[in-house]
Length: 217
Length: 217
DNA sequence: GGCAAGATTTAGGCATGGCTAAAAAAACTG
DNA sequence: CAGTTTTTTTAGCCATGCCTAAATCTTGCC
Ligand SMILES: [Mn+2]
Ligand SMILES: [Mn+2]
Ligand SMILES: [Mn+2]
Ligand SMILES: [Mn+2]
Image (cartoon, rainbow over all chains, first blue to last red; front, top):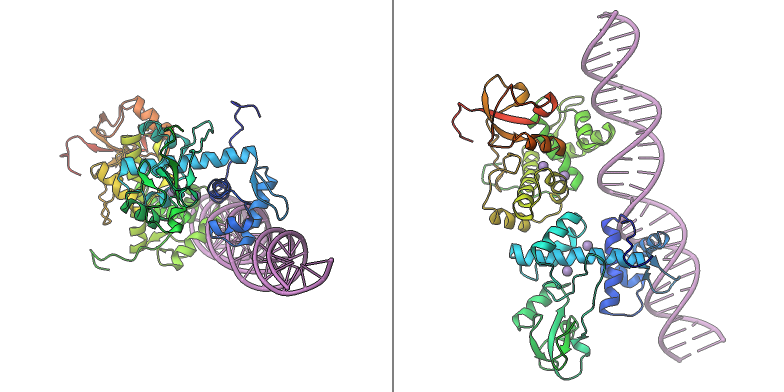
């Protein structure tokens, strides 16, 4: 399918959307083999359930999965995942900017609303917010036509010793967000990769970019 | 249960919430026997499905239903229904006031979001909107503690010949809303109960109050 | 290379909320 | 008021998305 052409929107259940999104997200945060086991852990379902859902999405042409191998997305699967992620991150931004949520309160609510708001709703809040490029945790918001640029950054627990600027923080665990906020670790803040005082687990949730790099993308 | 005391919030599925809401609403708009058949028609399910769901909600103490008789709500069922209706109407008001929806666009979206927004979300938009008393169609918004006052009004197709003011219009059919808007028939507008030019079907969706009555709730 | 440990898939169930078709009850109607 | 029509309930079935337990495949280690 050539760029600029749009496939007719497939319809997905909330569950299916979550699986698509998690396959995309696991690669992003920890790019190793995406097993049904990792999916199951992330989605809090049994390995058997993840196996069955992956098989269904493979049969519908949205995932690929060599037996006992790594789960991946087809082009249409990736496109569907990005649509869900766009909804999720726009909703989070809306809740913080317009409804005075704190950044540790938004993820769980977005996790539900991402499956139930209309295209119109998303378009309206996107316009109301001025087409934001990032969500409250520094995650990039995919555009309506399916683009998504990953920030040029490394995980804090893998970074070399240097001064750096915080780019994004995983929103999966509200406790981590509160811990970070208490230490001033928010997107845009400066720190040194050895002197931040976070546990290794918490540091794995933070992405940084060396201060020496220019402030692009 | 004495007023001011709160029962622990029961959890309902989206389907269950719809049944509770529809039982409440059918009485409000056309207060005759609420049969499983009427429920089925309104919810677009088979009579058999409605029968089964009513039986389940009866067994859980939220509805009453003498065999072959009229379906009714218990006190806790009524309270649950009012909570759903409050969410629905606040969401509609929010969509019109904050996201520039038109009044014929909001019902379908609210029908979905009413089951998925959190208590926090509802509290925030209620505050943002300044605790509104009515939705865009003139329907009263129940308060957080379960009060709901019905407007003192009659259906336009049953009203005696007189001048009257429009109080509310059913939002169930977007076409009716557009027809009314085109004729200037919106909550607060004046008309004569014989000279409005609506079909009988459309007029059944409009509630009016005689102009001579004082303008109280 | 062989074998135990671990990961993955398959097999068999269950709950929810729908459906159709048949049975039973109620409501008209001549 | 007896028969017919309509409404309501019951019986049996299906799809979705979970589950546990068992079988099977892969991996790591001696
Ligand atoms: Mn999130
Ligand atoms: Mn989700
Ligand atoms: Mn409505
Ligand atoms: Mn609804």
